[in-house]
Image (cartoon, rainbow, N blue to C red; front, side, top):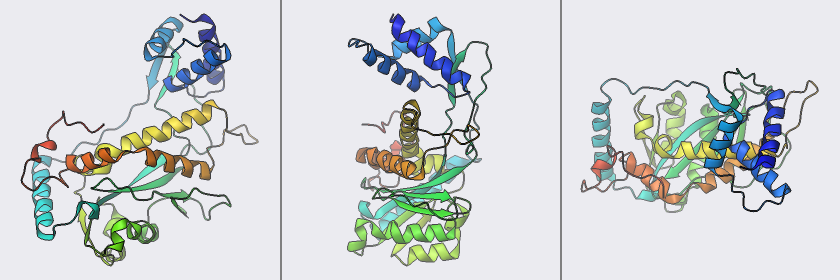
Amino acid sequence: HWPEIERRVCAFIDERKANGLRISRAMIHLEAKKAAENLQITDFKASQGWCNRYMKRAGYHIRERTKIVQDPPHQFEDKITEFKKFVKQRLKDHNYQLMCIGNMDETLVNMDMIPRLTVNNKGEKPIMMTTRYVNSNYTVVLAAMANGDKLSPMLIFKRKKLPKCTFPKGVVVHCNEKGRMDKEACKIWVRKVWQNHPNDLRREKSLLFWDSFTTHLTSEVTQKVLDTNTDVIVIPAGLTNILQPMNVSLKKPFKAGLYNRLIAWMAAEEYTHTKREKMRPPPLDVCAKWVKETWDEIKKPLIIKAFKKCCISNAMDGTEEAILCNPDYEENE
């Protein structure tokens, strides 16, 4: 029990609640550590156990927003089997190297990435303040190869033109009116990202997996990919959470990394306000920096296992066929 630390944490929580801001467990940990440093308390660990006990003593609990879960289509097992057979035959026919097999996917990121959870007193309904960009997103395009290589991330912002700021090296930045992957953005991705992966120097046949997003299926985009000596396999609609490496193993830690950076940024009070006292979201160059740093943190073994989990790069002798259906298969090192 650390009364002075907990008193300061309580004051921090009360202040954020008064301003209509969300409070996460991660914020409590950061604030407790900061309080311990200021009080020169060296043996305080801010452990999960301490946080649980503190919240119970203070009468706090977690409130969570509900979310919609997408169910796989009817008879999805048959579609999975068909897809696996098709992929296996394609790999046999062309003998692609692992460094030539890739997966690309887009993911939407909210400008302020509002947490699903907030700490609140029991029985009290929270009123949350949001930024004026609460319904504004940007798109992050991620791609990786079956051997664990990562391609440069691409960000698509919802604007007519990019601001005059310095974006970090190793990211491709684009903008359009919707902040989405349209045909032009997709062609830019092919030219600036896909064509720049190491295989391009060897001129070997490549294989790209992506979902059935409308833009991917347009004739212009398809031809642009084919012109790079690349074959394309479209993952069946509704099965990306089972058959796409990005969805199966990579998006979750990526989103978690972005969220942790947002929490640290908010805890440090680096944000500014508008004239109407609305909290501004992170600047675009900061968002790009977070994307680059978070993507760099994704480990190579996790990517390799993600492809195997989706039965894209498994051994051709069938020894790894059970990986897809094995819930105990570890994805993390």
